[in-house]
Image 1 (cartoon, helix red, strand yellow):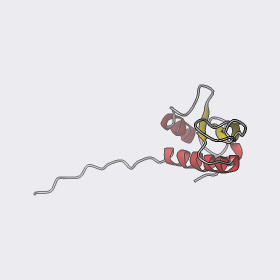
Image 2: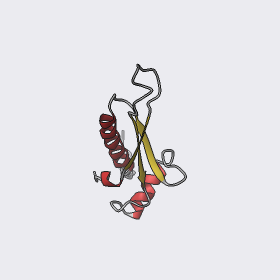
Image 3: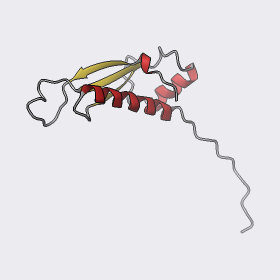
Image 4: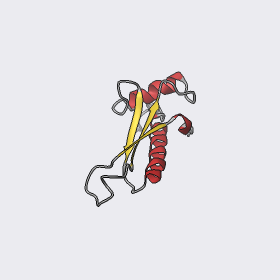
Length: 107
């Protein structure tokens, strides 16, 4: 797995949903953005594969984005977002093996 976390940019926002007194004041939700085409860590073929497999998460400007608001602190959400986007890109680069047709048995 390649660590391209230096190319990531972050935005924070208020988390949605039910909460207490803190929910309207603290920006704990983290959105991570990554410009796929501008990456120096991947080849052009890998970038095309990432964009095709994650096309529903890539916006019109070519940014891959992911929003995390699972935890109560911004730092924990940021770390979780980095972990998730690295895992997501790693899974998108996996290409299944081609099936080789074999001869059926006599049974």
